[in-house]
Image 1 (cartoon, one colour):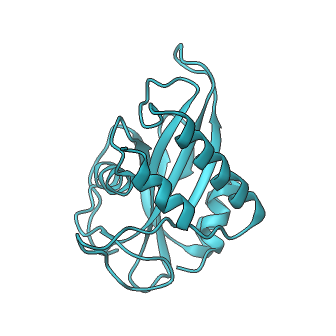
Image 2 (tube, one colour):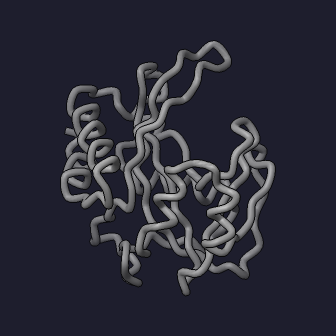
Image 3 (cartoon, helix red, strand yellow):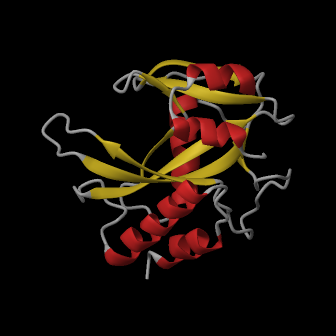
Length: 189
């Protein structure tokens, strides 16, 4: 079953707080109950993949200023049918930042994942997307992975982004206005 790899990753995930634990359990229930969980066209909600990008010394992170949402966020996007959510997070990060030095890493360590190593979820978040452009209000079941990149590499360009930049963790806390991003900033990377 195409949902089993994600379900296994979700069951192995160790949430940092009770709220993230509840969101992880809700995501497991959603994915178990819905074969179309990876499809954007599944209008009650769908799985998305995001990237928390850090510098090799772990002192900086990348935030994008999303054009449509007018907020500073981590890169990420829709799975569009792809059940490999780690690959979705990596692809979306590359598309939105233009960075080619991106590497999937394990939380709280420097180990870069190889093709034979399973990815590890860094964070799980469930959030409401408001009604817009004829689409009903729905939920994003966001699976977040930790990535590392070279902060000296120049960014690319994306129509979806108003701005993109590296922030120190302290300054990122000031720019990002959501508890979801604040939780990412508090985690040990």
